[in-house]
Structures are given as structure tokens and as C-alpha cells.
Amino acid sequence: MTAGTDTYRRELVQALRAGNVAPERIGEIVAEVESHVADTGEDPREAFGPAREYAAGFRRPRSRWSAAARPVPTLLGALCGFLVANGVVGLVDDEPALGMPAWIVLTAGAVLWIPSLVAVLRLSVPVPDPRTGRSITPAPGPVATAVGMGGTLVAVAVACWGLAVLTS
Image (cartoon, rainbow, N blue to C red):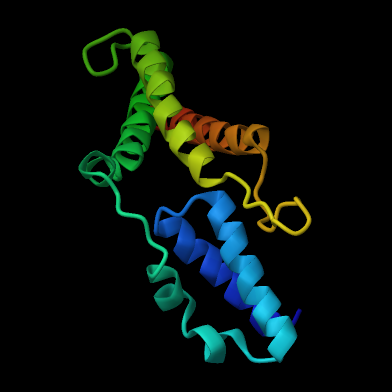
């Protein structure tokens, strides 16, 4: 496996994920590419073209709902951060946040974090190699993903708390 093949594999996996291809099928496609490259010695870009163009042939159409819902986790994540920041500032200032008790705003922010977490977890499903059964993608586990996202949320809360303390 050359560095060029590794790079092509990463690009191909990313393009196939973006094209709504199932993880098992992604593993099969990557295995076929790697097998061809190993047998012929060709560069994958010469044999299959750019990864995005090759992946476009395997793209699964999205339903209207999934296409329309694509930005929703990002928007919910942004709203979550906004609510957590306002809730923390409300706790520090001992004043209502957005016209409500700060704990309600913080709880709403925590609840809105869940759909964003689910969306990220769905994108980080490992791609199995059909030849070995092992994962061909270095994906963090669900616990690491949740801890990372939760840590970011806590960092936002601490930063807002620090700013509120400094400015009050």
C-alpha cells in the first residue's frame, strides 16, 4: 500500500459516505479498488479517476426528507451552544436567561445536544473490510465521540462563565 493509495482510499471513503453509500458497500468498493491496484500496479487515480468522480457512480439518492433535514443537526448544535452560553451567563449573573430561569435554558441546550450527537454518531460508523472483517476507517467509538462533543459543550460553558465573571 503506497501513500498515494492510502490517500485515494481516504478520499474515496469520504466521497462514498457523502454519497449516502452504506458502510458495508463502501468496504466492498474499497476492497475492489485495492485488489485491482495490487494486481495491476496501477495508480488508483489512473485506473478509476478522481475519487469523487468514481464515488459518484455509487451514490444512493436521498429522500426528500433526508436532504431537507441535512442542516438540522448543525442548526440544533448552534442553538444548543447559544442556549448553554445564555444559561451559564444567567447562572453567573443570577438573572433570568432569555426570560426564563437559567436552569431551564441549560436543560433545553442539553436536550438539543442529543440530535447533533446522534447525527455525528451515524456518520462515524466504521467501514468494515470484507476481506478481514476489521474496520478500514479509523473512527472513534461512540463513547469517545460523545465525550469529545460533551467536552466541547463544557468548554463553551466554561468560556461563557469566564467571560461573564470578567465582565460583571
